[in-house]
Image (cartoon, rainbow, N blue to C red; front, side, top):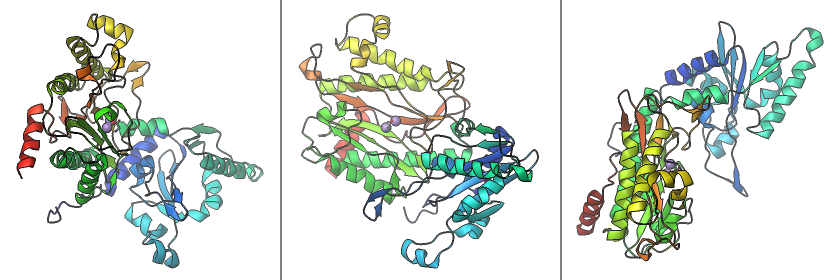
Length: 448
Ligand code: GLY
Ligand code: MN
Ligand code: MN
């Protein structure tokens, strides 16, 4: 990979962030928008968790340092983009490494002005003076809520000097969420690459799997392949769930020894330049599906195909889920896990014994990305640029209506799709998922 000119994957151009700022300003209207990033989080003593910037802040700025805040002054015919960030500090940089500082950040990220973050309390009241509205994510972080109250009170204390305090508070999360829901070409390029990297890592796990290994050994293969390919972080905690653990939806201990004859479900995603990928594959630890495993797997895959067929512009958000659910229910009837007609089973919700989650979620900078699923009380229409997962599952815990041969089989298959002008693009298609493909790949790996 290191010989590849496209590696590491390039950052999005500043022009992309500038276009988003302009779009946000026109959606919000006159006022001052205030968008902080996240701070660092202590793990223990002097150690912090790996830093991850706020997704909305990054979307607008491209800036990835902690302790920063983006301000947008939106006038009737002029918009000013301002960054507050950590000041240059020769001493701190010896310990912690390079930081931009306001001047270099302003130039590198195409901003109108930048100031040290420690000038926030002095400058924010001045910037808020005479603004008609404050655009702010109230309630997202109580510390920032408190700071905002302080700034507002500072402006109000100046009213006798002729200054007017903002009178309207408006949440930017709705408009920004709507923007982030429609991915632009730059975002689609990153998501496509994240999908490719993630697919390759899942293939590596299939190749390495052997009975007797610990689940975390497969997790290690996945993470190894992410880092090697330039994804520096997983997008979420990896699930490597063998045998009965596959029926625990958010299993994450990954510390069980995998047995011959079992399936292993791996739900893992890499993050590339801030963008997530989210793949689940379920495969036999020993490389061969048993007849019962294969039967359940084929039903789940057929449900996925039905969802794919419904993932196209003009359809609504619920249609892939409804299509997948019907196929799963037909399968539950075929396997004699449930009686009654498909419509009856839908009506009573009895299928939830084996399928208790929805078939997908928006995906982007956050693995469960922002954006409403309904609009005016109706499921929203799919349109080009929307990116989401398709992830039907079939989970069979022991119960009176469950024959022994199906006990503890848990299957989920998950890909990421982007709606296009005439259908969808599967961003993770390079990860094999038919029984024949998986068995062939695992057989080859055992000959090597
Ligand atoms: N990996 C999280 C999800 O599939 O939703
Ligand atoms: Mn998912
Ligand atoms: Mn997943």
